[in-house]
Amino acid sequence: MRNESAYSIKQRVKRGATPIHQKIPREGSRLRLIYDAFMSRKLEAIRFDKELGVSPTTVQTAVHNLTDFYGLDIRPGKYGTGYRLVGEWFGRVYVDYSKEAEEQARTT
Image 1: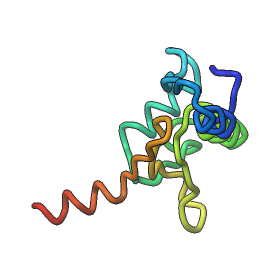
Image 2: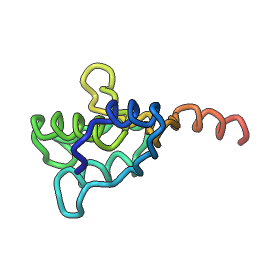
Image 3: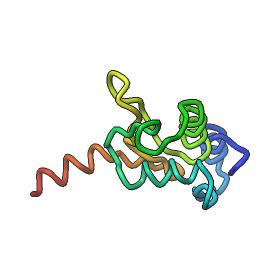
């Protein structure tokens, strides 16, 4: 895991430094389990305590780490339905998965 938050990396890039590529969590870790669940089910609410058997404290810590250190935009669902991945930062570029889903729905 990186030692810098997404905010500090964005500030460094604004000053002209080269961007750091996003890394993914180490294989076999709980963080990687949660990361893979978010990446496989973008925009879907995930309840980790019921679906993956992960404690709520672990999920809150993982969401914080994935947001700050890996550039994921994770938001809580409505009325306690879990968390959902709505976007991702790649350096200065933000990829909004909800806009992509809307565009795909229009073309189909």
